[in-house]
Length: 75
Image (tube, rainbow, N blue to C red):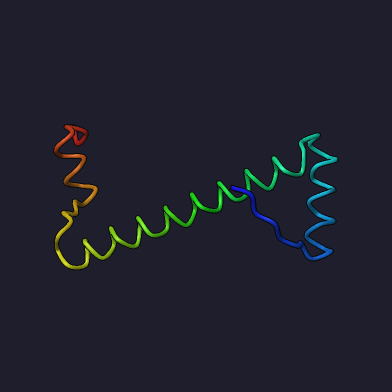
């Protein structure tokens, strides 16, 4: 997919400085930033979904003491 957009001058300056510092192409830095940003948003929504299931009682929750006991770590 090809996407075209315009960066504000400060973001462009920072991108170019980072590219110079790392030796990476600006396109690679942008691609990685987008991929990491998407991953962060996906993780946020997965966590929010899990929290909803916990709050509704659909997702079981264990205390640390219960987990330690089940794993035999209380000895």
